[in-house]
Amino acid sequence: MKIGFIGLGNMGAPMAANLVAAGHEVTGFDLAAPMPEGVAAAGSAAQAATGAEVVITMLPNGAILRSVAAEILPAMSKGAVFLDCSTVDVESARAVAEEAEAAGVLAADGPVSGGIGGAAAGTLTFMVGGSEAAFARISPLLEIMGQKAVHCGASGAGQAAKICNNMILGITMIGTCEAFALADKLGLDRQKMFDVVSTSSGYSWSMNAYCPAPGVGPQSPADNGYKPGFAAELMLKDLLLSQQAAEAADADTPMGVAAAALYKTFVEEEGGKGLDFSAMLPRFEKRSRG
Ligand code: NAD
Image (cartoon, rainbow, N blue to C red; front, side, top):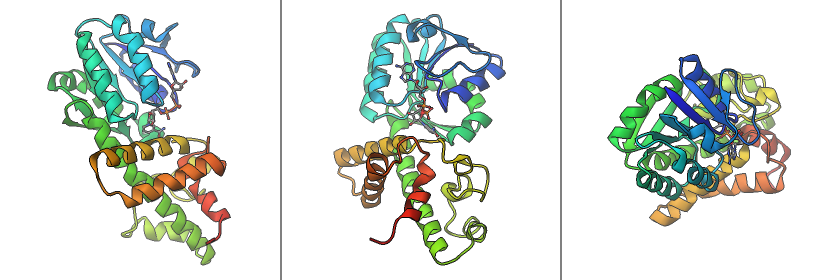
């Protein structure tokens, strides 16, 4: 298949590399990141989209998605599919889908879970919003880049699932980090803490698959000086999206509110910007009860 791929950062690059490895012809465009091996470099987003049967975007936020969509939709072939895998607000996803439909292009929002490890291994989970027809067309590609794809409903439903998932992730990462910091102060060895919790009722993806303590559990950004990974500012973005959605839907999310506030302070005042979201652990280590 001829694929355009726009946004080849931490996540997009390994996803595109897996499509190339599966034999697809991928043309990419990124404002800054280098092209992975086997991806042809386009001079612009519109050029990457021209003639593609499927265009995939993996971009930082909804505003950037909207501007890229405005640029590429006029260049896309009628009947082609526009699959956005970024995590963005539900409104941007729906607005872009409407514009795509008006341009004769099928649209799907397909945000992912699984982190950079899942992107590299091709084991992401895709949560997809859009028509049955769009889902059917992208399914073979989702099978290459992921291990599971759930068709959640109409346009925007994938993003709704994603922000709920990431609200849980932000909350569990904070809980895991504060528990490690407490365990340290209680004199408990971190490896023992991991051995117990990862096989007890406190286990979670944050503990078991992405342990925030260096040298403990599987390889994670903690073992690499907290280089992202999944940047703390992207987690803050997702938590703010969940709170924006909760506000609009009148949903009570007290732990989500607390997690958003902690990540906001971490990113804006405590030097967390540019660090992985699991760097909440050294942040808690530095602090006392107050
Ligand atoms: P990233 O910052 O590493 O990559 C984004 C890329 O988009 C960058 O390379 C940037 O240069 C490029 N870009 C920005 N504006 C552009 C434009 N106008 N045209 C072309 N390229 C442009 O971020 P990431 O970690 O790869 O995350 C991408 C998306 O995936 C985000 O929405 C994020 O929330 C989501 N996500 C990330 C993870 C993770 O673990 N990193 C996991 C799940 C979802």
